Length: 261
Image (spheres, one colour):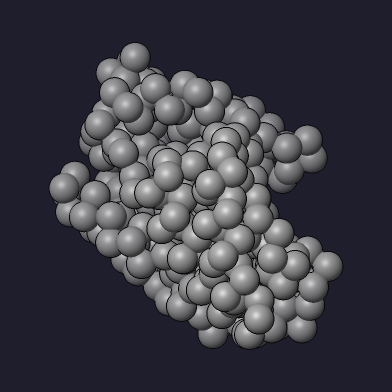
């Protein structure tokens, strides 16, 4: 299946002229963006990776991402968006991901244009499609779509593959990203950063951001040891867990108690 998908990328890239362009992959270090980077590299495209991080990002995930790009021979840029995120998010209500994505999108645009890239690539799969989403409303093949107000096209080679197909492709390619064992937004692996666990009704503050990182970092070590998926909302300290037994929940409650006092 993997070779067929790589060949499909080659054919599509030839049809739309991507071999004459430099492509910058928005690379989080997760399975979808890792597979996207891998496919474009294997297809022989001129591709590089761009990773945004801030002071609350998981360092383990970033380390794995840097190792991965080195192994497959892809140039990798890292950009710290801490200051931009603080400007955009502080004093507003969550979810913070909305504010963070805005910062990343505009930084990606200007980074690409200032460094000779004419296409951005994302790891969206078919499960990420949302009715009304701008990238899903473009005419023609939605794998390549330009947003006029952004001014640079987006290439999404996985958009026609379901999450389970992406999992199978990544496994075939030997792509196994570092897991923090977060609870995530869905049953599929949907890890991101601990700031997503700030309660939605709360106004965002640096103190809440610090708290979300600290408690979830400790909880992630418990989740990894127990091989469950778990995270904690703040400041409500709601523990969320897939398949936790009573013993694991008791250990989680002890951790939460330390941070909530």
